[in-house]
Image (tube, rainbow, N blue to C red; front, side, top):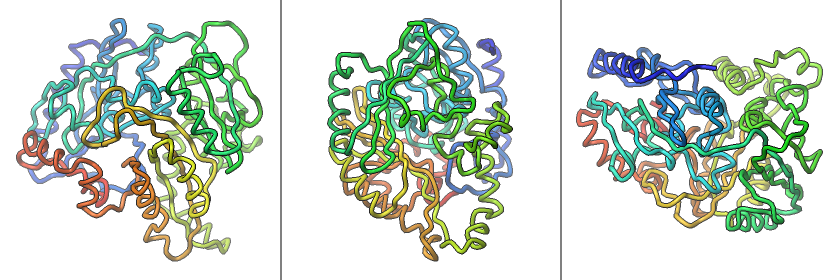
Length: 450
């Protein structure tokens, strides 16, 4: 286990970052020099980047609070906090998501129905702004409040003080099947209100829709009860277990990374779920960042497109999105999605803001949403380069009063984008903290892929 780095080493890491920023020519694009990414949209080629090599650790853990560097991955963060019997209030499902990335780009997981989004448990953070200054900011400050969903257009978090919650060593799971989305939505609303199901506490809540008549919620309960545990980093695949059993048991660490091993179900595209392939695929390489690198190679060399042409399949459109829809519109969205897109399974993760609204991703307080995640390729034909399905999804989500995450491609017109993502407030705060407009705007990053 990595030891906390301490404040002196943190200060040295910040100094290197500041020096690398000062060394950039005034007209050079500003971006972090990092080796991993969880983005699924194109970006301009990187020539130089900010030195974040000293910002990837945990500074200290003190009771229910941790001081963490912005480039620390959740894999390393959880390793440090579990040694103290604690975890962050929300732990996104992929190991190499960084804490700073989850705050500036939003994150979600099974505790979001009670703990909201990662930025809602940040007590204070330091941000390197476009002016080259490191600013300390807290909830209620205009920079802090505009930072979530800004994707680096307001700066980069170097340090975050976050809340932690005590946990127990194991997680008991119940997989509850529903025959239609209406019934599942009603169950979600009941669990969100009561924090329990059939008299048993619910600490984590997510699910999978395999087909219109087969949807499952997974109810998680932290526990210290001893007993056998399942291993889904080995030969078994987690998402298939939802259909095969009604109860399960994992260690806390394995529960947190249950989706990472097979990148939800996307590892099947690489053959990693085939029993023969799985036996020879090294366990240490069954993880999301390895699959992401394979996807990057596919995009670079057009491997999938070549295989489609050789097999005579229509040209494919990549449909990789996470959207939030109000729980009462979930059934309507899934029915539309089945008709127009036809991709299954999809991930379902209930979400509710903790106590207030945020300008950059204006979900409504006291409203339960369900995140619907879908990741794959749909063979649509020659119109694929125009992304017809992705554009239709954007329109439908807006029609239903929902929002779309911006980690993947987006196609909004500027005015609509500003309306949906607090563009006016973001521009106002950016003008204060980036007066020379050094940082790429959110619209240019997300839609224009700069």
